[in-house]
Structure formats: C-alpha cells, structure tokens
Length: 547
Image 1 (tube, helix red, strand yellow):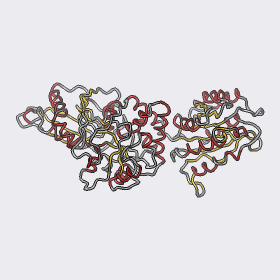
Image 2 (tube, one colour):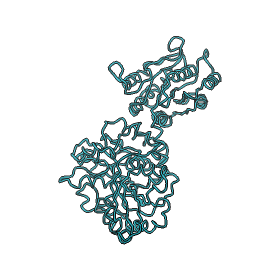
Image 3 (cartoon, one colour):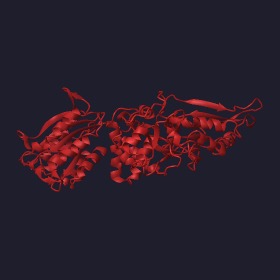
Image 4 (cartoon, one colour):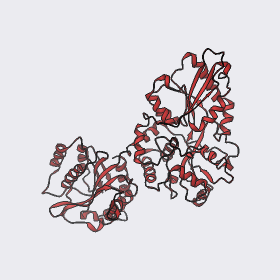
C-alpha cells in the first residue's frame, strides 16, 4: 500500500499543525513506538555452528522488494550459514535509534526513502553504498482536478502549484521526506534567498489555514475522482501503488515545471560490522544492488537509477519518461527544517499600528494607512489559528492623555468572542485604520513601553511573546519618556522568565528606523524598513518568520 493509504496508528500522516512542527526540532532523537515488522530469511540449517545475521532497517514500502531480493541470495543461503533480518521501519525512527541505541542494537544496513534522512543523522557512522531504487516526488490529485486546473498539458512550477486554489494536504514534516522535499523544491526553484524562504513559509501557513483534510483523505478523494481533491506531495511510486488494482484509475501524478526532487532509497552501511558478520553484510549489499534487485524495484512501481519506469506507467497515472531531476542540497534542506521548526511554538503578538495623520501620505495606489491595512489583513489570513494576536492603535493623546488605545485584546485567533471569532474581529478593526487617523503627532516611546509591559503582564510561557510596532514617523510626544529613558527602562524591567521581543517596522522614509533598531537590540527583537510601498507585505511576512 502507498505511504498515505494506510491509516493505522503507525502509518498515519498528520496534518501540518504546530504540535507536528514541534517534532521538527526533536525528531532526530524521538523513538516512535509501534509499526515494526520483521522478516527473517534463511536462518541456516542444522550444520551451522552459528549463523551470521544481517540486520536491515528498510523503509516500509520497499520491504517486499528487500524480502524478495534477499531470499535465497548468494551468501545468505542456509548453506552459507547466514541470514537477513529485515525490519520495516519509518526512517525517522531509525534516525532516533542511531542517536540513542548501542551499536549492537543498530542495523547493519539501512535503506531509508531519501538521503535527506542521512543528513539528519548527525554524527552517526554511516556510509552510503549506492541506491536501491528511485521515485520522483510529485503532487497527487484527481484527473478531474488536473483537467479543471488546466494542467493536462503542462503543470505550473512548485511555488504556484502549492499556493493554487486547489488546496494542499501536507504530510507530517517530521516523518515525510516527500513533504520536506516538496518544500525544498519550492525554495530551490525560486533560487533560494529571502523571497524563496518566504514562499516556503507561505506554503506552510497556507496549508495550516486550509481545510482540515488529512493526506490519506485527500488521496482517497483523488482516487474517487473528486474535482476538488487537494494536492498531496507523495512519491510517484505511491500513485502507482494506489492505482495498481483500480479498473479506471482517477489518481494522477502532477509533475511541476521545474522538475522533481527524487527519493533515492540509499543503501547505507551503519557502523562497522564484526568480522563474523562482514561477509554476510557484503552479500546483502551485492543482492540489493544487483540486476535482480533492479528488476524487482521496477516491478514494484519504483524507477531504477537510470529512471526506467514500471510497465504500464501511463495507465497507472504516472509518466513513462522520468521528469527532470531537481537537485536538493541536503544542508539547505536542513536549514529549511530549522526555519520551519521556529513555527513550532505559537506566537503571542500584541500588534501596534500608527494612526497619526502622517499615515495619510501617498503610498503606491493609496496611502500609507490603506497600505498598512491591506498588508496586515493579507498577512492575517496566513496566521495559524493557535497564534494569539491583539491590536492597539497609537498616535499622540489618542485616549485622553494616553497615546494608545486597545482595540482588540490578545486572544488566540480561533477563540470565540460573543458569537464571532478573534480573527474576524481583528480583520474588522484593521479595516478602520484609514478612518481612525488622528492629529497631534506620534507617541512612539510611551506606546512601546506600555505595550511591552502589557505583553509581559499577559505572558504565555508556551508561546513566543512579542510586540509588533508599525510606524511611519518619529516620537513626537515631548511630555513622555525620551529614547534613552525608554531603553534604560526596557533593560531594567527585562525579565528572563518572561521575555518580550519588540519587532519594529519602519514604514516609509520618514520613520525613525534608528530608534526601532535600538529598541529591538535591547529586547532581542528585530527592526525592518519598508521604504518601498510594495515592501510592507514582505516585511510583515518576514517578521512573522523571524519572530
């Protein structure tokens, strides 16, 4: 069965939730219980004083091939006094074993689905000795969906596909090489850098904000021919496997324009085999890289190292010709994994927007006020529901002698509030920014200090707590604290048990970026400049990613 077709506890593909993203930081050391099946072949006959046992940990979908190839292989026959013991094990568990178990309890050979796992294994003693099989990473959906999207003759690139109206069901990034490869493909296809990083985060957040559909359910919708079947990053072999017994296959593989990263099923030696086992280990390596193995993997819906497709490829919903290989840098994917793990802890952000009359200044096709409104509303749609956001507006003496006013208290975006939800309340209040502009200047420093104090009083130890200040001016409140007093107070009131970062966004050329940088420095935050009106959306998005 395909990797997402089995919905048992040990094989379930999870939605991209913050709880799942927490596993990104710890997957290399966590042991996942269950889901282990062992085949022991050729245990030797009664004439052997002892039998050398080769232990193999193999990605579950490749176990039938390994069993077939190793049974009766030269050097592993009863008369050779050797046998092979194959364990079906998810690669993430093997990574955990490599960091936690004694050498005697580790496999001699490991065949994960991707070399990305080898890169995640840290300092473990590993040696890759070839590839057992390959399978391109594709996007699976229904034939009807492909026709409706106009992708029958040519699909868009990875970035466009993953943010299309079709929606996407992202497998668990902690356990799915296909999901991680797909996001790595977005970054690679866009040339890397900040824009590419933002595109990856956008895909992740869009998936989190999308309909709650598991990858297994999405694949079922694809097999049933639903026109709204979400896209699912899977291996090509999984599409082939899902269609193997179908009379009229409706699930198809979409091959994005730039090419596909591939699962390469590396054959990896683990540690150094004892002298008594070395010959048997070598025999297993020979068998798994033999012509017989090549034939077996093709028969099972994989491709060989040359890209040869299984028989009846087109009828099984995949292409005969191998797609162009999109090479991923394992180190780059590791860095991407680290960035995504930053989203594991939900954010608790008090957002503070400048509504002084200087926000009436032209910007793009509107004003700074309309630009701030539109960029904030757009960014809000991407924020996961377990993030908590509050909203203040500030100018000078906006509420009596106070420079700021609380518009929406900080709550989780999915929280119910008197018949509506927090996200909708924020969206409604952001719409009012252009109508709220107030004369009298900008009370930046007093507002910042009060916002930090309010955020600390409302601190959530389970979240990343911060204050986001968006302003187009400089402090103009001569009756309040000055910059030096603000900085000294922030230092003096800093609480290591309740840290509050200030993220400052300087909107336009008149904003005091220097002051925001100093405030960010003393609070461990960051400061951004959005001089070009088109920068604000990117800056707000990046501020979320770098929180």
